[in-house]
Image 1 (cartoon, rainbow, N blue to C red):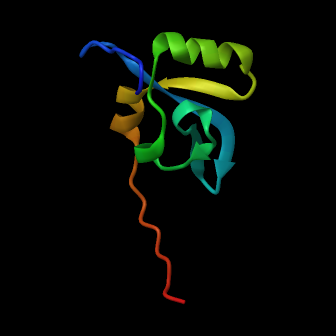
Image 2 (image 1 turned 30 degrees about the vertical axis):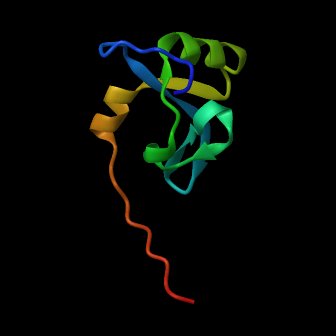
Length: 83
């Protein structure tokens, strides 16, 4: 993250939007620039930033510890046939 100094021990958070795409959760992209179902593209923020974001949108957004989500995530393969 640009402009943010993090210690090696500081817990990080993903921000989940309460929407879904199929059975996949939606996560905030970096700097709140849209959403993604791909955790590799999801924004990781400090606890302070997560609280700041979710305080203004508690009915829409939920903070989750990155360590918890990453430990429980499942990978999916998307098959796109040639056109």
